[in-house]
Length: 275
Image (cartoon, rainbow, N blue to C red; front, side, top):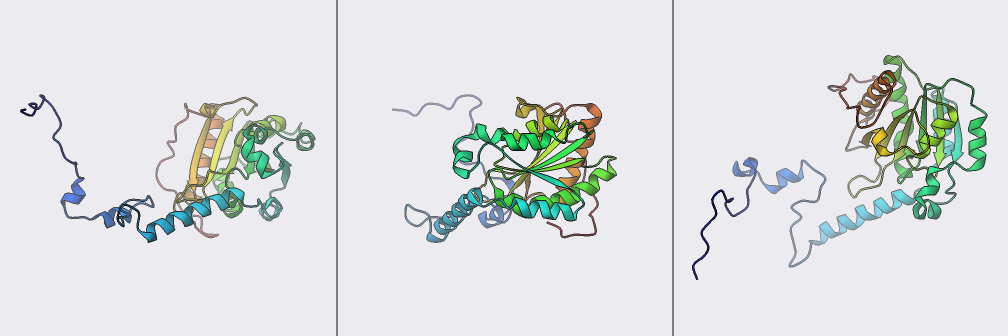
């Protein structure tokens, strides 16, 4: 039987290699550009032992990050050293088991925490910052306070400031909506530990919401993600967050309608460690 004739406009068979490989670059060059698992090789039908052990180690680190203890008291103390008087609250997920099995509980304040925040109502809060443990308490323990330090400087440059800081345990992103609504804040920035990945177990995310209230969806938020050692540095993340805060307050909306047009890399802050 004769093979079928190729159709008009068909794509030639065989792999299409990037131009860089045609110039003689190897898979090792690609591996230097990404933490992704590429070009691992094989031993028979399996991965090489080194690659398998590296995967197992990174998986263990990700699991450890999820179950890390959130050191909320230390976070509150370090925020006080920045001149920020933080309130400590909790969601209705009072242990890690409930938090992981009942995501809905992490979106609601427990009764004592709600009463604590209600005592603060009456003040005019333009911007509230909530620091929540999320799915990676390890990320918050390491990065949150230092990001707030950089953010406070950038917000001052943008003509605004942090009016209230809340440290929330057992928090999901949407808990910031209830906290912001109870405080009467015009905007809330939720800094929260992101779901750990195999290449980044300690990634911190920032979720910005104008007019926070219970029941909002992610379409009404902006997100600045991947603040960690191999991702966004503190200064770049703070610059983007401050720009979105300023524009969100000015335009009176956040979410899919607000695009990040903050521009190029900002000038560095002299004091403090870089990430």
